[in-house]
Length: 182
Image 1: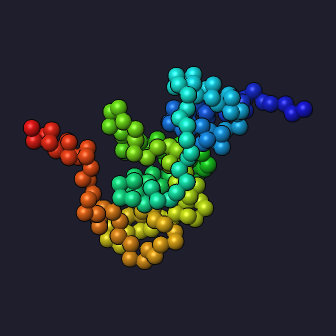
Image 2 (image 1 turned 180 degrees about the vertical axis):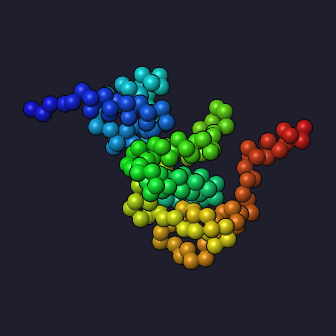
Image 3 (image 1 turned 120 degrees about the horizontal axis):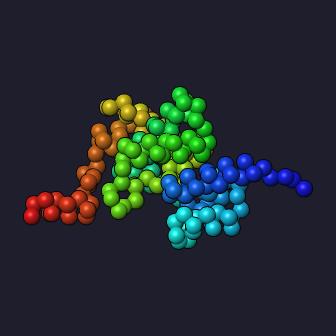
């Protein structure tokens, strides 16, 4: 019979609380925290006052490569890589700290979710560590951006230097422009 440490269990609960408060989905919690699914569900309901969202985690790299998500993903990955290389951060703690710093730079609009969720950020790090995605310097601005590892990226130009023609032309942007004009 193995003995469980009370201190270790308290640390796991604290980690789960921090992850839930940052918006982690249940699947992420189950992967990173050694608490049972039942305990994680109870903890989630206690903190959020509702059941965790259902559904599958992102499983495609495509979302990270589209114009606006790519800018946010690239910012997050640059922060994450800096923390890993220069601050000695690793694992889920590096993801959490990088995500907190990302949110400081890109705070969500009041009442809305951030464009890059913690679960997507965690998935992005998993995709990068499995070499499905990588960082590539833009030939114009020299900034590093997330790219598909299998694409030909020799003369890569980022979405900021080579902006798509429809960039920023969302319904929200149109509504905001109409509100300002009125």
